[in-house]
Length: 108
Image 1: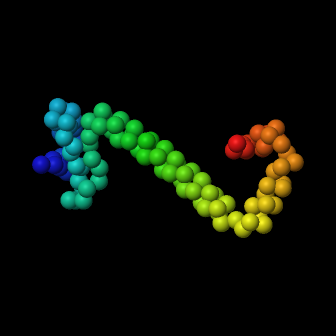
Image 2 (image 1 turned 90 degrees about the horizontal axis):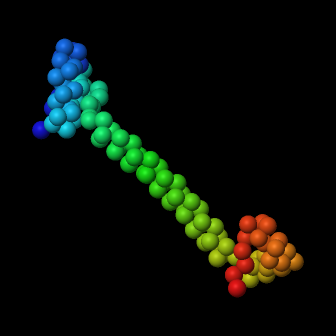
Image 3 (image 1 turned 120 degrees about the vertical axis):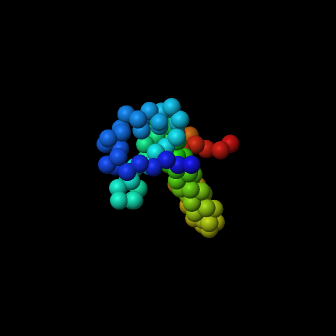
């Protein structure tokens, strides 16, 4: 069961509550007027939470990049034959060196 403590009681028993959090490795909800205000957790759990948040942000950025790539691929797939020919004509004079300089590659 999740332990709770009133903020006023926490002031009087801070060492006892912190020991409980650390030894039992259970969170303690701090309440003011029966409204949850904060949760005390072991520091190791907090570190793990921060690592999880970092991985979550990295995954979100990676997924956003994949979605942008997918949208770009979809847009290019919807090119008409005339638009595709125009892109080929635009790229052809650049040769391989020009494409590499622009950050593009040619599929062979």
